[in-house]
Each structure stands twice: as C-alpha cells, then as structure tokens.
Length: 186
Image 1: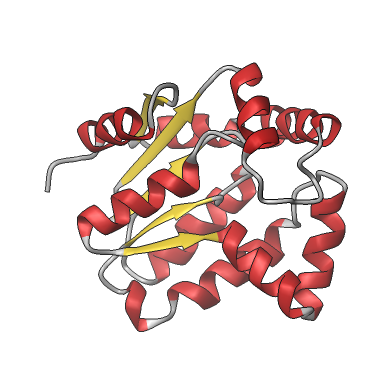
Image 2: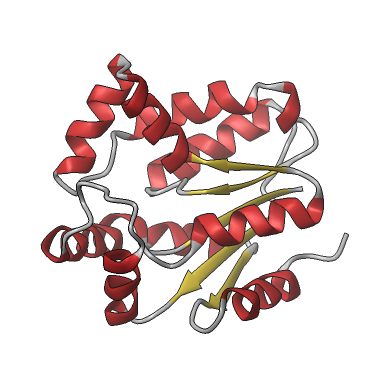
C-alpha cells in the first residue's frame, strides 16, 4: 500500500505517517527527514535544500522528485510506504504519478490533515526541534507558501478519487484513529 499523508506545516504528518506505517508494517518515508539528513551531512544537496528552507521556501520540484525516486528504489520500499512531505506541488504530484506508472504502482490513499492556522503556529513554536524556520514570522511564510503552492495538490488528488480529508485537531491518538478509518480497506 502506498499512502500519502498531507497537510500544512505543524499538522502532524510525520507523527501520523510513522504510526500508520508501523500499523501496516510498511516503511515511513519522510522527505523532511531526508532533507535534514542531507543538511546535517553537509552534502551538496543538503546545502541547496538548507538555503531554500532557511528562507521558508519550497525545495525545487526536480530536486525533490529525484530524491524520492532514488529512495523508493530501495528494497525496503517494494511492499509499500507511507510518505509525508511529498508531493508539495502539482508538478511533483504529476512527476510522482509518472514515476509510479513506470514502476507499475499507484497511490492507494491521499490523506489530508487540516487544522486552524493558530493551532499550527503554536504546535510549530512549541515542538522544540530548533529548526531555523521555526520562528513565528517564518512559520506564517511557510503557511502562506503552503496555501499558494501546496494546497492545489489536494485538488489534483481529489480529481483522481483518492482524496480523504481528516480533522487534524485533538490528541495524536484521536487523529490516528481518524486516519485509519479513512484508509481504503485491504
């Protein structure tokens, strides 16, 4: 099963994706984690990614798609995965569909978490990761970028018939149960 957990910064995508992946016995793929690993390792990709993230902007589409393609080529991804943080633009979604088509695979579910901006800002300010873009001003920039560039991805997956909207407020467990209820039955 290939599942995308989607939503604005602070919606809990990573937390929920890991829980769902563990529940289904598949891999959790976080583009954010891949980015952080590249940044911490000081790789060329990491330096490019850091320059965009520090300004609150999205990493260029082709850079992200290439990184995801390289990652899912690994054996541990053959039985499926739960991905968060990707795709973030319609162009990435289209490129991902073409990539999956070449592999004779499809996205089985697109789960979109939603929560009020005020709650998202508070979550991000209090999460304690010490990210360079976790200031109130940069968080608001990230939310604006999400609304302009990323939210249209929801419409793309709605048209494909796999979109499920899930309330991202409440406890981690409550949100998790809502996601499990929204997944297609195996």
